[in-house]
Image (cartoon, rainbow, N blue to C red; front, top):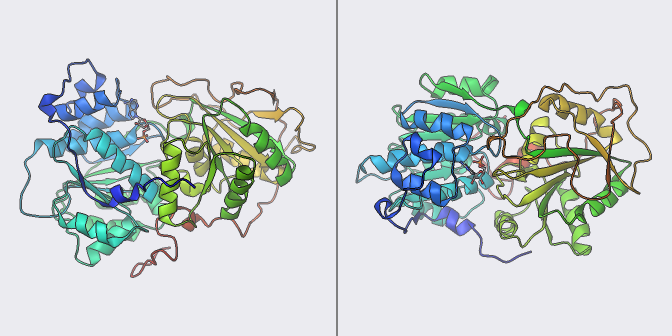
Length: 490
Ligand code: AMP
């Protein structure tokens, strides 16, 4: 395990940007962001980040958010949605004077997981780099209270938090939300899935009713729609991309496997592919994540495990090592499916299938980011055929089958049960089609043969007691680290 200094310190400590003033920074380069009306300190940061054109979600959201509208936005993972709310939020801060004397953040971002909080904090640093004196802080579960309390005592512009720990500070009187001008709910659907509805409602009630609310979610239906009706004022809906028309930049592939031993051999062969820059191998259970990572380490891979049962410090160090490329392979449960934004992840391998089809989409979205292409390979046992069908129905894309020479499956799911999926997913990547081949293209790497897929067999879902529980897998406060009190969640 690498021993890099944990990002965690930065996470819970307020930091003030120390670089140049907006006026010092040349923003003369023609840039598609110029038309969006952003403050020039933000334009210059966008230029410095190397962005030339706003993504569709940014182009649609930023001007309306700057105009002060409440917005409900759907957009695909990896589509640039973080900048779509961070930039207009910083724009508001940069343009309006500080109402001095009071503490508490002016912008509050709620995220479902610690990992996502970390990503948003990083985005604030990136886009706020030319904003002199910007102060951001993050409070998330599983981290020491001391640094968080110090951060909350000082003047603060942006606070990024997971709901449980934020409520804890609110209830203990250490945090005031009376200055909040913009409330952002990031991945609102996932926060509701995790049972945070009451927490979100209470947090929102502690902010001024005059605030602007921006909600981002994979879906705007059901509970998310009800939450929006409660919390938002006449929100405009921006629906850009759904699960059905995303991921053209990610090539998907399916390998049938006869069992665990066969999957291990397939994984071994797949990871020998020299075109892999970095890979995430997803498992269904924490035990599998440890086992697979242990096996790969024994084979000499630069690998680590990441799952909800690990202490937060270790999780943060592992993510830092991944970002610094000290790791080539991360073996993770779904706790890592959201929030990891490492553009050099070229491959995602599903060693164990996710519980929901939505999780599949989030897993494969860890690759093919920031305009790059990616390959998502799923290893499925025969009993998984129904899950594959469910994923294909959800994405409306068929996952092309392939075999590795010398490691062909002895058995395949019977034809006839119909793996055939509707195929209307024309695809629209977040970066305007700069991606590579769409689903179904031949996969890179030697030794693979595509094959026309037979139909799938109907198989009963197996319930694996070692499977990481859905709540624990995503919850930002695993049992033991911080026991949620006062709150009852479904
Ligand atoms: P997100 O969907 O917010 O997680 O962003 C996905 C990735 O896209 C991140 O690595 C961002 O740095 C990158 N990104 C965001 N906006 C742009 C843009 N307009 N042009 C190029 N890359 C971008």
